[in-house]
Image (cartoon, rainbow, N blue to C red; front, side):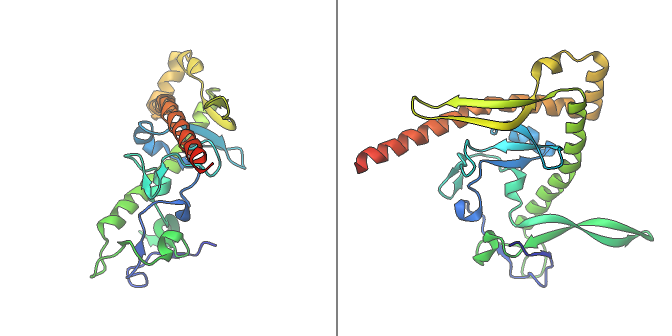
Length: 250
């Protein structure tokens, strides 16, 4: 169970965070939440889709595998991609809000919290969060930058996906993939951007998306789908490896 505390350089002076990867850290997942603020980086290596949450609102995900606990970017304790999704890079940290007096007004200001029960913290080893004199380490500065991107991306996502949905550009997608004669998968519950509807928009609608910045985001989502080839090829490779091990053991 998570146990969040407001990050403090005195209370958490000796805090360290493991930056290795593995199932023991919760990295064995088939998808992670993604944010428009990182689409430009994500689309180079990950397929991006949309999903609906319990409230019927759309959010983006980066597809990592074809099963619930399958991460095809995870290889032992390594993550085989040059860009790490923000939802992973943030580790045990998240943005919370604290009421503070700013210019005589009470405002909810973003502050960093840490989950002291997170498996990346539990070992007591890894990257230090604070320096000997209480300042931020480079690791913490990187995490704070990631958290800012996530915080901005949450709001951007709400606006972007609502605008795309209003133009009927968000459409359900069913992935039916055959890896070989014996292995196939069908994924449902995903949504994508309808390329043909996007191309058919009139000038006013296109300009509205462009002015808001959402047009670029829509095309980044579409271009990310070329990464499905990489994901399928890695799945096929692992199937062959598994079958090879089984033949050797027989």
